[in-house]
Image 1 (cartoon, one colour):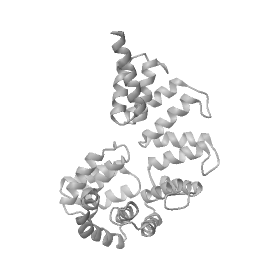
Image 2 (tube, helix red, strand yellow):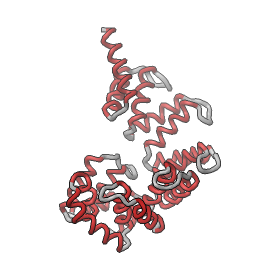
Image 3 (cartoon, one colour):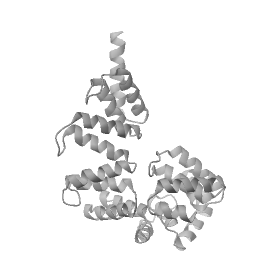
Image 4 (cartoon, helix red, strand yellow):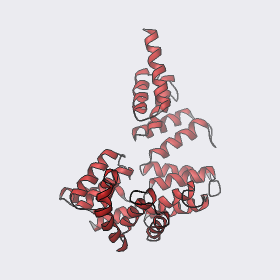
Length: 296
């Protein structure tokens, strides 16, 4: 377990996943918590799956792990969260468990147990000082959005930089790539931005692939290139990106980017994206099916 936790702490989620899986098979509740955590956030090259994550949190709770219990009970059992999981997680945080510090911080910041923004930020800051990339990432988000702390894009950039440097954190790499490309919180450097976005994609970020597709399609800082856009939309869609599925459906519908005009593929992609909550794809699907009915 120590090796697996060290790997996750350093942002090497793919390598950690294999070790946690073996430990979970042997009934280790803490390993079950980490499997849920990886699935919940879609870390590394693992697809995000909140249902599977919840199942692992439930298993971890039943196996006696406090952090898994905090995640599972926090969904619908506030009483047992307060009387059982919370005290145990707090004791672990006081014992310098950085994962517990972040979990406890989330309870305070989200109101899962009680709202205490000051204590939540304090715990998150402690985990940041320990070098935990996920804590650094969360602090970056708070600074970027101006949530609970003053909005400060330069500070957000600094937190994301530290998180990305700590390991293969594709979310922070994506945020840094966007920051460099758009000049947010730092000087604009589009070459550096593209490089980081491509690295984030290689490390598992579908959002980075989707952003590269938008840059290519719309010619943002570079000449417009529909063929490159189609390639990046395909890559993002294959990774499960909902918006990319809708965009790729449109490319197939219109025969753009060197892709053949293919109404069946367009319909399939629109349907998948619509089922995942994309309203534009739902609209395009209805228009496409309406055309089909009128032609028949």
